[in-house]
Image (cartoon, rainbow, N blue to C red; front, side, top):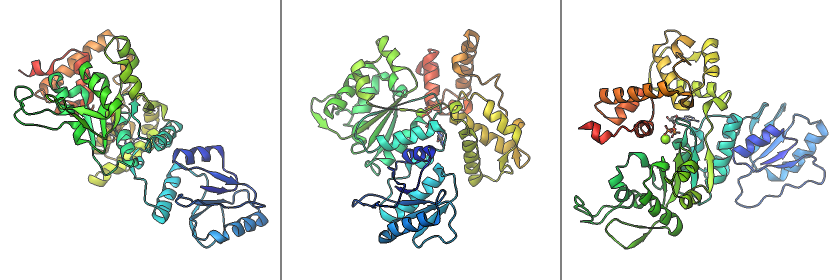
Length: 425
Ligand SMILES: Nc1ncnc2c1ncn2[C@@H]1O[C@H](COP(=O)(O)OP(=O)(O)OP(=O)(O)O)[C@@H](O)[C@H]1O
Ligand SMILES: [Mg+2]
């Protein structure tokens, strides 16, 4: 982006977060607009501090580049020819995304819209966006960290969509849900007769993801022997199917996620340190919702709009009491919790504006898991067990009832030493 004028620091941040390099030309005198072939470039003429002579000189500077997408920021009575967009201040992320779409359509193929689904323009989310732009084109493993429901999987998908691997497979694996005895065969495949029940050769998830990205969710739950094999994939780019000593070359980018502190798992001997260093090359931290400020409302509006596209509901906004409650709630379940609250409120609300009653955020119930005392932990175990029973030990159903992800159900089972296999019989 060639910025003719003076960007504010915040605007620079927003642009950087959206993946733009900014070159500033403050004074037209002696300046030159040099363009390199293949770059996606747009010019932004910032008229907010401009006088007539300055504007005229800048327009002269732009004149030989009439094919350069031009955006005007501020007031212009007569936008110059070739001006695609006129923006009023402040320049925010939404407008930058609009701009990117116009420029992409204009000059070069889109880099994928994966990032569009990650709603948020708080400082914390701008940092996530900036990192996604930096990490996507690099062929290195990424470790995504963050509490439950913060969008780890969504970010991993966005990363894939933004990388040159888009169009190739994206395979998400929940390491905590793979039965320990089958982890190796599931991940790396097996030969016919490799073990009882292996009636035919079967390729594993890594081979299925060849050319694309494999998302290893809850990597902390991967058994140690599978960790050793994963290390080899990362070091040598090869796998061996169970029952074979033949190495198969594969080209897969590994993105792993964890909600547990892997360093602590290393200290307890549950996680290989060398694997950790291989995975933790690029770290993407998803901030909890309570650190995202005004994003809470932005997301709530987004989820309501999304819900309204598919359902006829009366609710079309939030009143002041609902907004107040949203901001004061601690959001232990993060974005997923917010999404479910909004959907529920949209259904029950009898007025056009959802109020605090409909939102029903009772902080007495929903405090952070870290605040759970002994009694609460016991109650948590009872609650999960009861819900599992009521759901016929079907994890998906249980997750739906508790409004958590399947991963969380597996995690809770592990935490409370509830053996699903044993309970089912
Ligand atoms: N920034 C966001 N914008 C829009 N939707 C979001 C955002 N973050 C998360 N979501 C939505 O919230 C839900 C939870 O996200 P996701 O499954 O990626 O979280 P997670 O961190 O992987 O959770 P868990 O630790 O429980 O597996 C999904 O439905 C996702 O689409
Ligand atoms: Mg997840």
